[in-house]
Image (cartoon, rainbow over the protein chains, first blue to last red):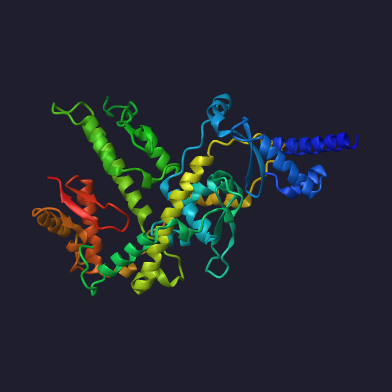
Length: 204
Length: 248
């Protein structure tokens, strides 16, 4: 009898969490989930794990994602074309190479001002930044008060984390790990060779 | 195509010109509109390819079609504007008050650090692109609620951004640090062409004995010749050697 009651209670908790996630267009944080369902944390975490087992890409048209600091029910990517046909909705146009560079800059070195972004890339990036603000992938998240005019500082958004499928900023590999040390060495050598007084080491 | 004489409204000479580029496919006028509205980045539009497309579409060994002069004029007018826009967009921007605004003061270590940072960011951008591609096909099950009538929220920041965009103008780049201009692009075009007569040429060799200003103008001259199809520029990897090859 007790087992039956526990099972009912368990099913109820799962249903509650499932319902909240189903209706939310944004990722739901654990604290929001606890507040809406009145579950305690271990119980909610157990339910999330159960839902993750239930909603996998191999077995369901719905998947449970851990993104942007919360949990989100989303359609299985393998069903995307059918979903797009049904919703008469095209995927957003892909970003340009320059846009990914700006996003990577803000992700790894941000928050940054527009001028800081342009200085690092070596070209004016204002148009790219505007596009990313319009897409809500970047946001003005404060001001650099120590600089003249207190320029706005740009940072990544929740939509950025969603688009990248990341839980948080810490979910990305370290910048140094993305580059082969040999590439860095080659750049340093080329630069040294390019100096007017450097000894010749082959053709630039 | 009709001429613009008389009281009839002038037809759009380029209305029938369509382009097929990686970044855009459709009417040329649509491409211009997207660029002017900042919905397509000028960096992504290969201007040389655009000119080649135009020439392939309209070059004819026979006598010019009626209205060709007007169409060619419109194309030259719009494409030179694109060159100007791209040039302005590519002009370096330095933050006021930063020490490195005076580029002459940049030490070798600083330059090295900057290049290495940029290389890392380039790799980071590539990784990000792959990550975005893997996650593009997830659709949330929930739907965003529409704001209630009369409760549409306006973000002050977004509003001020929009106003700035509507009334803002691109600032002219400051060229005060360049000093008097003592060399012209034409002179360096002539130098490059005579050097290329002997075969492919390394850009580094070309500018080896030049000062910074002449090196910069030599680069502009090389770009100009490349855009005219008179030479080919090749650089097989970022920061790698740049080679000029004759095409005539």
